[in-house]
Image 1 (cartoon, rainbow, N blue to C red):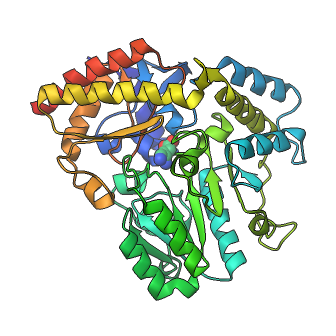
Image 2 (image 1 turned 120 degrees about the horizontal axis):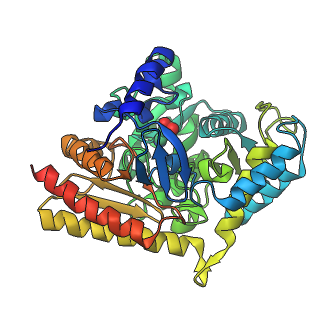
Length: 434
Ligand code: HOZ
């Protein structure tokens, strides 16, 4: 039985200090009805809580820790940068280095602007799209999550869906009215919205591989259809690859599916565990950002030297070959092994699940029917998920505490970790059966 005595005490105190005891809602575990382990440290594929429990971690700080926790190269780079001062609010060589490295992975990005969070990246990309096109409306998919700026907290996934408030109070009707909604994977609905509002639509923003309604993959031809529709109506196509960037493939979903968006938003991995995100894309569009153009966006800690150093070290690790192939092959194979093992255990226990994998991301739904969009995801058995989640945690496997999230593999996960996780999954599926 997992002992969380110290975490429980810490959580009680934290709840008196912060809403729900946390600085970001999903990590409160409240959707799972339990107490979050308070983390003391992490190394490689493991995280350690303040009660002395050790977990194999598949959350990886919600994506960034692709090289594993406290990777020596990343820590050395942060230390070296810190010795030279922690922030200057002035240009550095590190910013150009991370920009160039990012563009090697994402050739569609001809110019880039570094910011601090995925929320800033998507919010700024949309402002830019509006400034560039002179149009007001945007299109987003129901259940996709693009951070917490007002216009994007409409029918949002992730924590917003987890806590039953996909459209947040506090977002004005006028702002919400400029966000047009379509179901994910629904080309026809998208065409209809463009037929009706096309002249006023600045951009369609999408997680090309959706990671915030569980992991949902694009149907064949869907992303290409979006490219064609946006082009036809003169709207921009924005890929929010904050989550699937460097994971669906090293070049993200755009490389995996062969689609070139006009703008891309990145986050998480690009900062190697420190706060970095970015938006970038076509030069003619990016040159509308201040100080070249008039679309304003700024930030004191944007391009912070510690964060740039961590991002550079992480992307350099991703460029290294592993067993004669690039890192994405190793990550994908490990993830596949885990997913196949989990599927086999579910079958053995007679539990119906749907699994999805995109490179080093994976997710499971307790459902008998395929999951193509938010409605399908929401109709999966949430109670079964909760039982499975808690049994896995008890056995030292740390998964995202919500059906509307994705889990992540890192380069640090070992064969032994994967075998242990598959065994644990077998026990957990039996629990689901009662
Ligand atoms: N929005 C993040 C997951 N999609 C959760 C971030 C966190 O709680 O740390």
